Amino acid sequence: MKQIIIDAYEYHELEPTAQAEVEYWLDTDPWEFQNDKGETLYRNCSDMTHEEIREHCEANGYLFDDEGRPVHHLGAVQS
Image 1: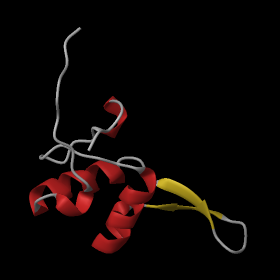
Image 2 (image 1 turned 90 degrees about the horizontal axis):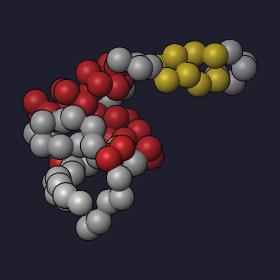
Image 3 (image 1 turned 45 degrees about the horizontal axis):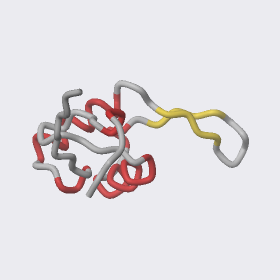
Image 4 (image 1 turned 90 degrees about the vertical axis):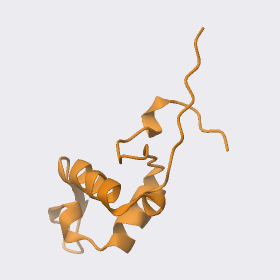
């Protein structure tokens, strides 16, 4: 077995250029939500503030490499 160790970062820990990559990645798959009237709406990352993006990434457990590519899907996280 081979082991690869990757440094993983939360959105707010990334440099601005890496944050822009995260924002692009999030915009490729807008998420659905229901408003108060029960209507299905879609939200893009480009419609959000940096604070909202940070909260969204934290709530979903998203982690990134230093260039902003998602790595949270690679396995268990150790601190």
